[in-house]
Amino acid sequence: MQALLADSLPIKHGSRETTSTAAAAATSAGNPISMDLDLPVDPNEPTYCFCNQVSYGEMVACDNPDCKIEWFHYGCVGLKEQPKGKWYCSECVGMQKRKKGK
Image (cartoon, rainbow, N blue to C red; front, side):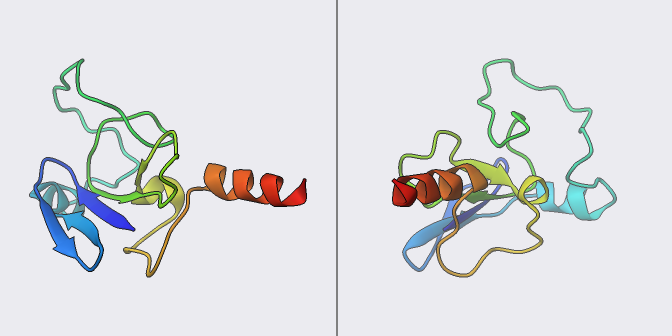
């Protein structure tokens, strides 16, 4: 599993990458993750997660290499810290269950 903080460079942790940035300071300084940040956003900046927002705060990657979304904000998927081991988003978990049920 990967964790990500917006606007940062990857740091290796085990077999996956994590990243960190000053965005964590903004989040811990009173900007809840679910709150819209009133920052200028480049219209060409990619969006992620179920919320279809840009990268900000802590994020986790789905371990399904075919995941359509790939990166998710911790708050949007109910995480408070980096999960241990592999992590799959709810869409990929549902897809795996449907495949097994056939």
